[in-house]
Image 1 (cartoon, one colour):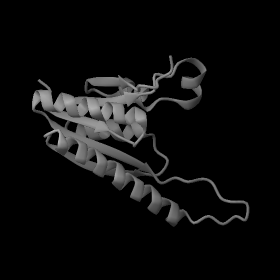
Image 2 (cartoon, rainbow, N blue to C red; image 1 turned 135 degrees about the vertical axis):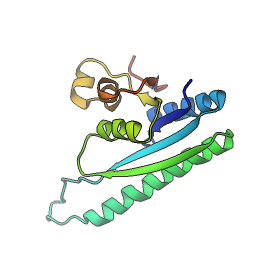
Image 3 (cartoon, helix red, strand yellow; image 1 turned 90 degrees about the vertical axis):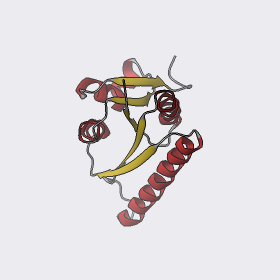
Length: 151
């Protein structure tokens, strides 16, 4: 039924819960898995002297993104799952927008992603990429709660 699974990852425990579920699901259904990592290169902070090496910070974000993608690909390979990866760089855009676009362009027939399970004020203040994907995607979504989700 689902043969093309998109799994957004950011290296967090929440995203890792979604990643492990996506790997297991892809294995059980002999599906192609596509990991997506979005790097937000918008950095509006400067230090007290007014100096800030944005290029250096972006390089760190890229390096961390490469590690996250490599770890996900290795986990899929270890499980015997066919997976590919993609990294997208944005400049302050909502991560959810890029996830939905990738689901349409790839094309995915299922998105599996982790969620913090935030409620009330926490959700209002922090927002939720998972919720925004859920509201805007035409692709079915499987949300996986983090082991440390709000109770």
